[in-house]
Length: 272
Image 1 (cartoon, one colour):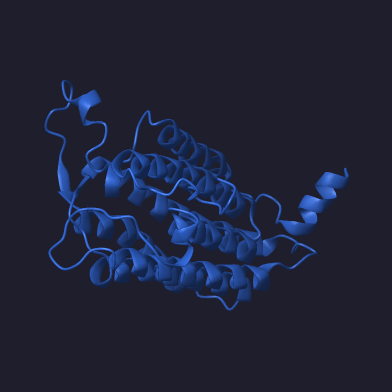
Image 2 (cartoon, helix red, strand yellow):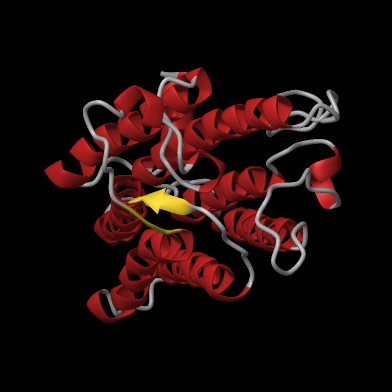
């Protein structure tokens, strides 16, 4: 009973929507399972360092897997979610502060990601089209469902503990930290270079994926702004996916660089 009282103090009740409630379970489980597959090395979504992964296992059954340029693939990942956020201002034109903050944070996050793709990141590899479509669908659907769940929650009693301004603070820390470390990554290659190097600067001195750590922070910022069960479950699933991806990334660096510092963790400084 005490646990239920705590949950009701922190989160809205489930909204009256079968779609949102089913997708709360389905999307979170699917994203978390993909993260476990990344950590185990059984399957990788094929982008970035792993754009050519899984080929040996699938060569006989799928020798001509279609790939697109990394820049085009990354735009495919983020543009639909950015569009969903922008269009939501027209679909749900209300003055509720919590919804306005959530829509603004989601839209800003994905417009920033598109900006980075166009003007910050340097690409050399390819991306499997099916991986791009899976991730794009996940970003798009989660953005749309976070906003829709929030709109439905307007008719429900507000949680007694208001976390939205803490959520805004987390979001700002996350988006700034994510951008900063993406910029550092973009500077590891000189003009014309295509190979990978061990990144240096910022939190790269203690973890190999600080940009993932700050992206997780962004998603927990969304969850606290929103205070819906869907947003919280998706933030946890995102943390599991990026945790698995960061673990696989650290293994990749260890296999490629003999001088990779052993003290550098995957995601959480000094811990994991």
